[in-house]
Length: 295
Length: 274
Image (cartoon, rainbow over all chains, first blue to last red; front, side, top):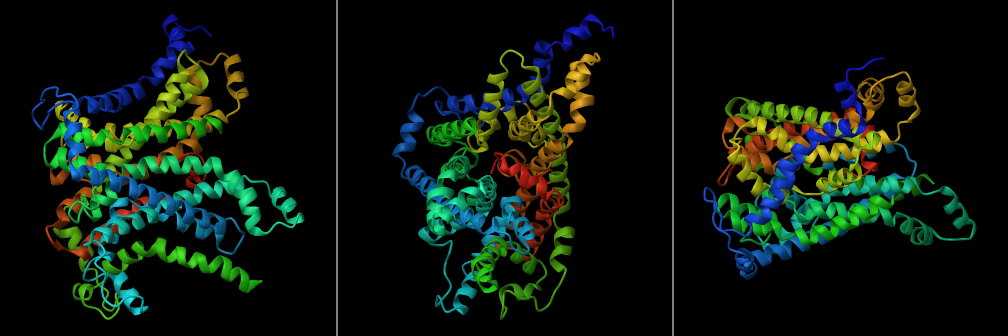
């Protein structure tokens, strides 16, 4: 088969390789890598909407670190991520352990359990907002009927109520992700190990402590590190339910950055707020990359 | 035995079921409840006077259908673009081994874990400079920034497992790399491509921050953005219409999911973006 020299050259792995990755490179360099660097640059300027501003060094960072609202947001970002991840891990693992046993309706249960993760976050957050309504909350109604509380709980009107409510909703959304991840992990553990343990007289709990949990460690690192990156920078859920309120109690890096930069027009300051969790994210990313490589 | 399994499996499962299904149940209940019943009812978990008034009101008095069409357009277009771009990228990385392929592969993975939350401010200035602001199609390349790394990563895993013998036979017969990419590997890669496509569709349908910041006129909004910016005004909540909108907005993602549930579970067993 004879090919024209041009086509033959195009077909060499060297040339064709670069041609094939070009579209992805254009998109990712232009709309991801460049904005990432621009974000760091913007955080060092006094830019506002419609005004490029001038280089001001670390002034924006000095401003935000002195700002109690920012410090509150940094605290709640960490608090939210820590407790949401802990909840997702425990409840997700427990669900995976249940779903890993054979029982009637197992397939249907697995399919349904993933729904919170599949449904668009903002739309389900709206349903939570209505469920947590101060006056007409169906949850309060239920708790009163069960004689657990006496009067309606103002879920979103008090700082700590709102903080915990958002964590519960985040757990609701991310728990299926952990459950499926752990289910895959559990299925890769050889049954022989449990049989050997049973012969040695190990209890269910001992088998879990000595076999299941250590063997699930690699998947745990991936799930937690990965999920933490996106929980730490969550926007949709918090913005839809509390907008950072009441009085900034549930403000996180992202919601505050949005308010300062987009609503308030302070691009430089907003960029500094958005960039500030990068250190934490690089640490998390390191764990993800390492664990993925090892697999 | 039966009692034990009931206690150890079905009882905890029932708790999970209630917790995980509650918001969806609540959307359905609210959607079909008469207006008076929303705020004053002896039992909020029951519908005494079922009605379609909220659905009809949502579809006739708001721009919901437009938002729905917009979301559908953006999700389908960004899915097609991203799956195509990702397929050729993954093929190049896995099979062509051009100089620097490892660096490209690492870069793609790192791009995959950069959250939109740290990009949306600088990206806004770029969007304005490019005159892409408030243009619906602009969301297609923007969504590709998180879809391409994700799909490429997924497809790299998939293409790795296709045996090399097939293409070596084709190469002996004189097929070019492009012919192999298109005629030999593509048909085998279809399950992987479907997997990438359904995840892309769901991720696009779920996207909120970029659409919120870069789309401003009502005719260019997506479902989630339109509902939170135009159906919620001040303290007046049209809960019936809001829940009807949420229910209808959840359906496409849920339908795609139920048709391809096996792909989801398989895809999630790899590494998946939350």
